Length: 206
Ligand code: NI
Image (cartoon, rainbow, N blue to C red; front, side, top):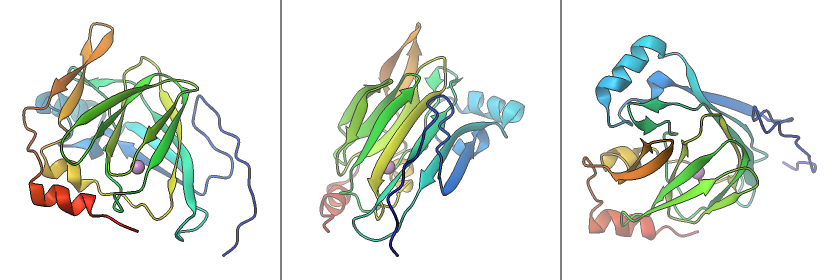
């Protein structure tokens, strides 16, 4: 199917994107098993489990090899215990597919981890573009007091593997409050991937 060229106005405060073909949202209760402080998470769900904590507007022109998916992510500010709100996070099902994120409003981090378990953390802010290379697990973190809005773009045949994080007991690094800022803390429940698991991810081709 051929698509005509299109232009999409983005509201940097809300992430609303003209011409978006899909919208999905995550509620607080959808994010079980992510946060270190399970008691604080249970209390938050009891109080406001239906609260929408992030949502995505996106356009998917075609699923065919070589096309792009693009859109915006809006993340509410907040914490579970001392841990800042995060997205569920994933590696692309075709792990060698990259992605870009561009800061529209607010302040946060792109938390990334390669299959070997190495962490990279890059700050994202208005007019900053973060490149997530092939083979990197990625998760967004809102470390600010305001919503974090980013626009993104990635190959349309990437897919998402969310389970890679759960299989390792979470990502290796957590982002916690540190006064008015943030600090990276080792996740004590983290289980490194085996040599075989790492090789299978890195073997992704085409
Ligand atoms: Ni992605």
